[in-house]
Image (tube, rainbow, N blue to C red; front, side):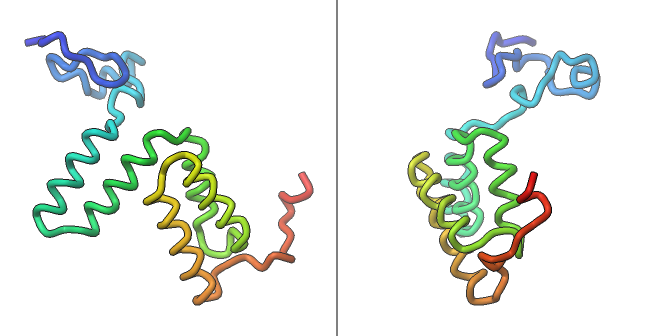
Length: 134
């Protein structure tokens, strides 16, 4: 039964709109199954109330990331891999995330930077990659 409700992508939520057939036909896109910040915050609240603060923190960061462009998220993911970024490059991300009103994500990246420094997982500032010349 179609209730007339729609998801963030505008697709009707009635009659199980999420299906392989809908994905293959192009009727369904990524925006049709994307979670909203409100849903993620509600899940974070449930996780915290259930005694899982780590899951709650992760869901709260995910809610903040909903406002970021997908391309930025993928670049940040790459930047957080060991030996991919200098401390200065990660701190630029911290400032960008703060400016994007994503303080939990900014704190996470700052903590990662500090941990990478302690464990020598940062790319040395003098290191050049072949892609630096492109």
